Amino acid sequence: MRIAIASDHAAYELKALLAEWLRGEGHEVADLGTNGPESVDYPDYGYALADAVATGGAERGVALCGSGIGISISVNRNPACRCALVSEPLSARLAREHNDANVIAMGARLTGIDMAKACLTAFLSTDFAGDRHARRVDKLSNPQLETSR
Image (tube, rainbow, N blue to C red):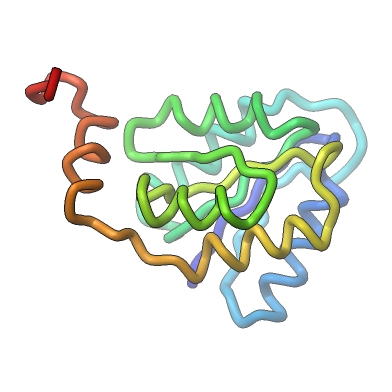
C-alpha cells in the first residue's frame, strides 16, 4: 500500500520509527517530514499529508503530532480526507470499518511505539463495511445531503 506519513517536531522520532516499520511490512512510504526537533507548525504537515491522500499520491495517511489533535484537525480541513484520532486498535479498526477513514492520527506524547504499531495494523488491515455506513460517510463531505432527522 502507498502510505504518506507526516509529523511535527514533537512526533518526528515516532514518525521515523513507524516509517521504517511500515517499509519493513512491505508498504511504499512517502515521508513528508518534519525531520528534526526544531519547532514547526503542524498544520503545514497536516495539509501536505491531506493533499497527498486527496490527489491519490497515497492510499492512506499517518498524521502525528504531540497529541494528535492539531494535525488531525488540519488534515480534516480537506474534504477528501477522513482523519480519525485513535489511541488503541479498536478505534483504529472502527475508523476504517464504519467511517472509511483514510488517515489515522496519533499523539506521540500519548502513544508508545508498540501501541502505534497495533493501531496501524488494525487500520491498514480493515476494510470499509459500506452498507448503512456509506450513506453516513457520504454526508461527511456533502453536508447538504438530505438528513434523517
